[in-house]
Length: 113
Image (cartoon, rainbow, N blue to C red):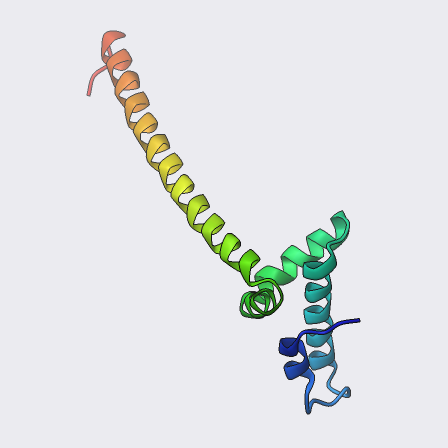
């Protein structure tokens, strides 16, 4: 199995007796394997959990193995954020318009301020 220099650097000089560190390395190796080879749905769920838990490590592994994919991911995140902002603005505008309609109907039906 190929192992990135990043993960190798995390192993170097560490004892296998430290369970927390062994689990951490196992997680990094799993993420690296998923980045390289993909996997099924259950593996995908685990990968996304670990990706959010170890953002810095994910970034470093991806940068070493597939720098172009990292750049694509950054662009996609920016695009997604911009789209989320557009949707949020549209929803706020629709909410304001609905409130105005509700208020007009309220008064039309004889309601008071």
